[in-house]
Length: 311
Image (cartoon, rainbow, N blue to C red; front, side, top):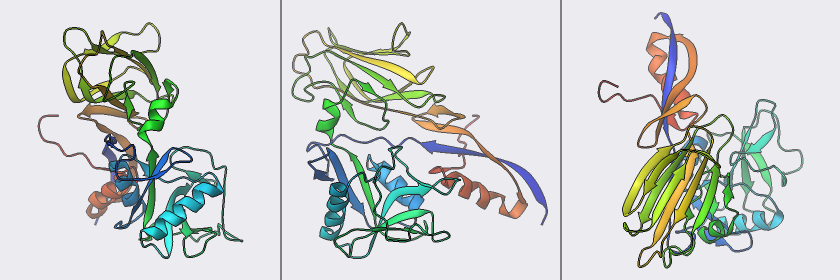
C-alpha cells in the first residue's frame, strides 16, 4: 500500500448527568464526603470505562484519604468484586499519575515498589485485602471500575461560584419550592468556551425567568427563558457565564435544573451538545487510515465525524 498524510477530525459529546430523586440516583452514598459511588463491571478497557461513568453523570473515581479508600473497597466487595478495581488515575508525559477529574493527587496507597515502570498507565486497587493497596496496570485490563459523582444535596450547598464541570445545579428548594432567587457564576478552564444546558425548567410564564449572561458582569443576554424548557444548550463567548434564577413568586412550579461544561480546546459546538474539531495530523498507510482515525478519536472518548447533510 501507499502512505498518505491524513488530518484527523473528531466529534465528542459532553455527557451530562441526569438528576435523581435520592441525591445519588442509584449510586452508593458516602455520607462523610458528599460523594456517590458506583461499580461498573462490564467494561472493555479504561477508555470505555470512563465513557460509561460519564454517561451515568460521573467520572472515574479519585481517592483523597484513607476513609474514602476504605469505603470504595468495602463497596466493591459488597458488589461481588474480589480481585482488582480500576480507579480514575492515568500517567502524564512525565510518567507521574494524576486523577482525570482534575483533583489533586494528595493521597496514595501503593503497594511497596509501585508504581513500576512498564507495568501500565492506569491504577487498580487490590480489594482482596483490607488495606486496599494500589498498583499500576495495563489500561486494556478488563477489571471492574469505580465511578463517582457529587451528591445532589451537596451540589445545592456549594458556593455560587462553580468551576467543576458536569455538576447538576438546581434552583434553591428544587423541586418543592422555587421562590428563592439566586445567581450562579459558572466557569470552565481558560481557553475553553463554556456551554450551559437547561436540563429542565418549569417556571410561570407570567413572571418567573431564567436569564443566562455571557460574562459575570456586564455581559450580553444569551437567553431569557420561562415556561417549560427541556434539554436546550447555550454557548457563551468565553469561559464564563452567569445564570440568574429570577422568580416573581415561583408559585406551583419546580424551578430549574442546569449543567455546564465545555468542548475540548480547538473544538466547536456544532449542535445538540456535539463538539467537533481537529485532533491530529498523521502519516499512515491508506488501508490503515480509518482504523487510525477511530483509535485517535477514542482517546478523547469521541469518534470520527458522521456527515448527514451539506455541513
